[in-house]
Amino acid sequence: MTKIVKSNDLNDAAKCLQNGGTVVFPTETVYGLGADALNEEAIEKIYKAKGRPSDNPLIIHIADINDIYKITKNISDDAKKIMEKFWPGPITMIFEKADIVPNKVTAGLNTVAVRFPSNETAQKLIKLSTRYVAAPSANISGSPSPTSLKYVCDDMVGRVDFIIDGGNCDVGIESTILDVSGDEFKILRPGAVTYEDILSVTDKIKDDYKDVKDVKTPKCPGMKYTHYSPNADVFVVMGEKEKCQRFILDKISNKTQKIGVLAYKDSKYDGADYVIYAGCDMKSYAACLYDSLREFDDNGIDVIYAQFENSNGIGVAVKNRIFKSAGYKIIEV
Ligand code: TXA
Ligand code: MG
Image (cartoon, rainbow, N blue to C red; front, side, top):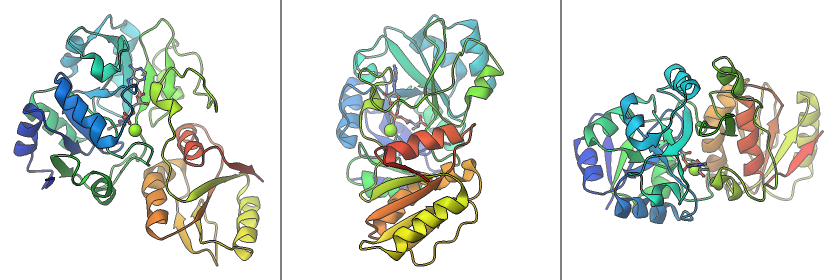
């Protein structure tokens, strides 16, 4: 049975982690599904609860910067600078792994992903547990990551021991993943800590993230699986606001199915079956994206048109997630 507890009531959940159980907890990005990273049986429970393929490695969460030296090896000075600047916060770094980290966590890789979240509840839970906490996003594999209690419960009640109610996640999309294990640093997954942010600390990073549709052997194993997809069919409509509006309104006036619109900036969509307003900048778009996709499903929507505009900064990450949600069905207007 799954126990749902408030964020000021963490003792039993921390004990559960110590005893090899599973706990869903809030972070500033999305909810995570945690277990003791050094306990292989506990790690197996994560893969089972998510229905996640075992070749997709997990991020280890820490709440004390000194712990990084116990689970990794050979940290470069430039990687340390990034840690100092952005931790705690929404960036995960890939390091050479220390021997104590089980292969089950890293899916056999000799590197390990580590993150120090800024969310207070996450930090308190990790500290109370006195464990390193491996945690993927707390969704069933393939679905959008949950960023509110409702959608955590939809996916995880009955599959985990504890769920901690931490309200809504601030950022709304998963952390930036930066590979710092080689001489050149590389963004494997864009997020709220941007290329420009990292470049302000080190020039070991050469290029911004490039979305590659068909990567045969992705460096980030998770990237080869379908991702962030609601049941509804998603189309991304890209271009100037007025042109997007015209295209989508035309679809609405000829509709044969229930149409939902994820609207951006001050666009109006009279006649749509369900409209969610993503705000007027990419930060608010990120914050509502995953919950919106699930909300369209809750309202029986068949087709979602997501209005989108290219931008840099966190816009690179929003683009990456929304393109994947749409299975790369992109309409340029
Ligand atoms: O914001 C986040 O990062 C959230 C919260 C809970 O911290 N976690 C998260 O975990 O998004 P997950 O498992 O859903 O995504 C982690 C990604 C996967 O695509 C995985 O393949 C990749 O990180 N990854 C993990 N370890 C790796 C490694 N050693 N090398 C390359 N990629 C790795
Ligand atoms: Mg995930």
